[in-house]
Length: 162
Image (tube, rainbow, N blue to C red; front, side, top):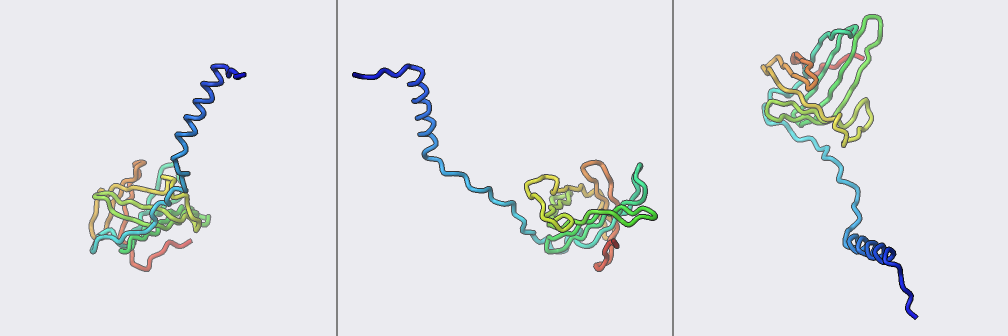
């Protein structure tokens, strides 16, 4: 005697079989390839290479903000931002990674922040600054948030004091 399967179960079984058949040819997806953290050398003689320091005051911030960029010819960079307030030790952020130029834009890609590896997929670790003025000893950058950084070239051995 033949057993009759209700119609709704037949539809469910056929749908399930179709779904499984569709998955049969798919290979499990492996981990995503990590973002490329290999720094690319700057163009020979690129005027952005070197050490740059910007010192500014912002409304509502007690003290001065110092921003330091060390842009190496091999495409590596060091970035530091420091708040200096009278009577207090400096506070800040120190990052390392890669830099490159995209036309009139300076692009910084952070690989380590305060000595710890960062999530390379997080877009917060890629910063773009519009180059609005560039001369041998002066550099003006506009950050996406509207902050203007007026920087001057510093000696090769310059470091921010912590």
